[in-house]
Image 1 (cartoon, one colour):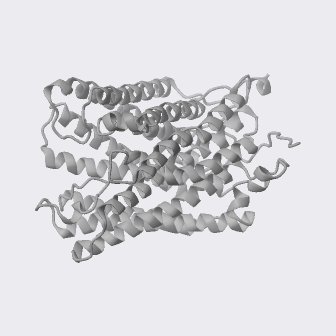
Image 2 (tube, one colour):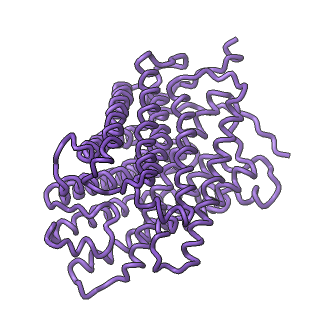
Length: 495
């Protein structure tokens, strides 16, 4: 019988490279939020930038958010995983450099070349722009994505090397000896299990993404080289969905590593935990067809698979994580501060954001809802209130001045402002979707404008609170690098 007891771990500060990742993520996140606000103001007819500028911002906002939450998730995963396996910091730094070069390429392609084919860059749109942009702009956008993907792939291969070097194989790092044999209580820590899952799915997703982007670059300059559009769409969505799905699996490591320090209770890598991560390793690879349910040209079995796996993937890791968090917090005597509040809020955001996807993943509903603002309502809840809250919780934890620091009145106001603002903003998306307001439309009908104006007000609140979170983190960078206990002791330990 496995015996799970809490063993205190040293509280390491972040290395300079991790802080560089987080600063990059924070700055670009704010920029992407401003782009999002400008789009909502355009739809609300409060400003007038025109459709071309709207779709340029939409392209950057989509690609930028996927990239920047990946960078933030990698920072969290690398920080904690490096305490268990021997990672290469040089490759970690090289990846950030490659990412920044790729970002510049994307910015130039959009602002200088006017590329606005959206992050989905569906074939053959980049090469058939009807004069809206030239080949160079399309090549710069696709090349930027390819470069960023190559850097991510290099980093994940190094992570795989380090995990295999420490545990012998990816299967052992996933805890399979304990899953399929007796639970001896010596399964890898939760951070290692999660990192292994992320590495497996991201390597597969990145190789698929690099393959289709390379083929589209060839098509751009040699039109005689053609691609099956349906195959291209399937590959793009498989790549994109895996990458954006994996970001929350990287960020949740902060929950696994930090909440136990507050409660003095272990996060158990038991059979249920390992089984859920193993199941998600498979499901995440095949869930993407739930975004293609309206594509009648795909085989019927493919679409049914999307619905079934969409249902199944909603629950395993989310349920064991939410249940695990409730169990270690319940009657623990935890004393809440900004970091623990944000991490706990993130679990609510993750659960709340998954439900609209669960509903939209039903074929009969999808026919009506998928091309409406219901879908942005899902992924903004999932990312902002779920994943991004984990990142802010991690930032607050690193920069916490001492164990007893609780945060000031502005911190608490920003916490509630962020939660309320995000809920108001995302609910306006969901309600608009329920009212059949289409997504990706630059110009809205008069009947839709009140929803856009309400959403814009909530976005302003979210940006203001985010600006405060980022400012607090930037002013505490020096403390974030130091080694000292940060988690507030439970009440029983104080008494």
